[in-house]
Amino acid sequence: IEMQYINQALNQRLDKTQLLAPATLESLDYANHMATIRTPETELQIKAHLIVAADGAESCVRRLCHLPAKTKSYQQHAI
Image (cartoon, rainbow, N blue to C red; front, side):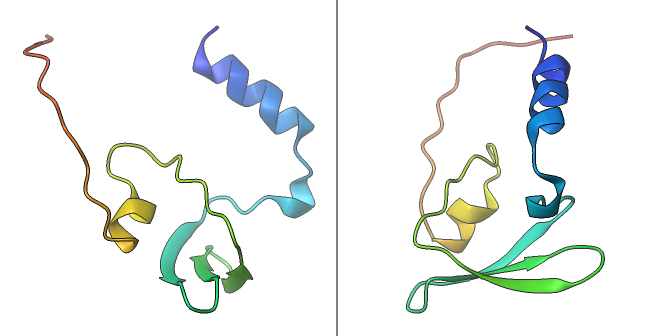
């Protein structure tokens, strides 16, 4: 299934009052379990005991947590 159809199905089921998009993670405060999120309208502080970093290869969450990334070259090229 193409990703656009998965995204469309998920968006139809989301509670729009709970959705922060577009949004950017600005900072993490480990001691207080707080995340600072910026949207075009505002900046929010959210208390979270768990953050799921599903933000891709250039992960902001990984960078803010100072976690290293393992990379591997597959010796592939594309045109």
